[in-house]
Image (cartoon, rainbow, N blue to C red; front, side, top):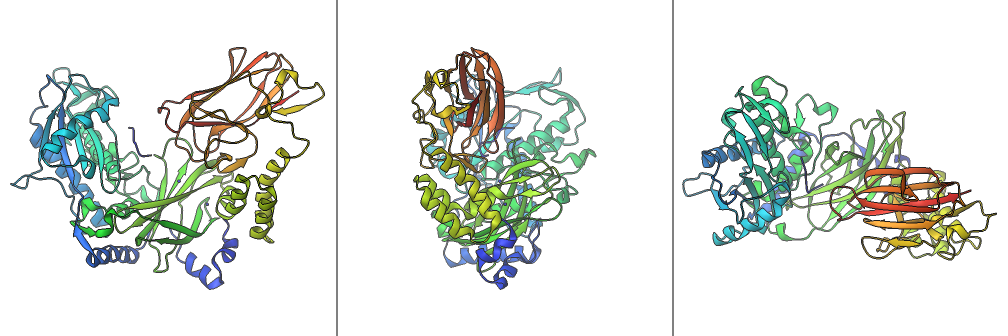
Length: 613
């Protein structure tokens, strides 16, 4: 299932960050993965008070649309079935919000004069639509909604596409429908697929069915998957990202925004536990305009948030503790976190949640994070007007389950040093490191490692950039950064070829939260060609996606046109390491191509590629 939407500093340093030991104690008390019931009550009251202070009618509303291509009839009895599916969806969200301590929240759906869910039929301009055509379909729906006085850009569209192919005689089904979703607190779209057998009444239907994707299942199982999918994709349209259940949550079942779309209502057939909404996502939806009939006037106001005194430290059971202070122009009723391991998108992210104090202080910890993994920690503030704001840092867990938080420490504590490096002021960067680190030897070592890279690259012994081809380097030179050598050909897919930097505001080459002085900017599609003339033995280095850019790319190193090394579908985070034999290579080519998600954000970078003899 696709989605348009697509997350740790040592507590010993917290006193220096937060001030007095008394403040440290306040910030780290009662550290846990979930907020207590009393904290949830406080969050609920804060949302309620914000509404009472300056209320307006909520703009939030789900609008249900049924789209059918030209020349095709709607699936049988579609209006009644769609209404039942929408009511099932609303019941799930409402009951889960109540279970988490947020009662009296109903999903606001456009209804007719009799109070029934209104299903707006739209016939497409063409007869042929497929999975990638979500935007095309939406564009054809918008004028129909506009004629009815509905602003699609201020609504959450639940858009059922009549693009399932069901053969009742052979009992086979497949679909070529858009099936994804995305949105904010004010608008969104969830594309769904529909067929005549999609109906909550048939969760227990044991009729055999062959599904093109899921194989031999039953109609009941099909309904669990695709009605669960309606609820899941609507979650994306309501701004929810993916996450899976933590081990301590698994007793309840499967998290909706993980793979919970596939387990929905399966307990009715005795096939396993049900689907549930995590507390983190209950906090996000508790203030969402779709679930509140009145909202604060600030619902249209842009949020401005600072995460201060952020500190992340190793905890027991290969977990991570987080603390800090959140300050915002819109009150914050909860702070949640996504601990998202690299790879697999964000489906395998686990969550933690807490409610900040009146002063904005918060603290929580992750569940067990496994071993030998790297990932991103996304810290998200949930605001009473339904908006969210976030900050992210990197984390690593070694083979023994011990968190390595050096990158996070650098990102959170050494930003002034990094800012100085962006201006090429090495002396200022050195001074900033000394000012910030003081007697903290660990922090000094972290900053020193980065500074040494840039000081070495700027030394008088460093080769002049782009002055000589690789084949013409003097034979007594044992190694040479590829980024300073003159390429025979250089092409990038966005902006211009750049060496030892990126052509953007951040300027510094960054991979997995670390910073590097040497490298090659290679936004896909990119090609860099070098003449080696068999003068070198090996090419070593790393490659990946720049900083926290959203992208997915393929890397390839070729010698005389033949593949020597390949890395596919590389995303942000720690990159890939290569060590390639080039002793027989006359012409070396570095290629970066789209990794399957389109070209947007595909900021490939080659980090410290170095030729050695």
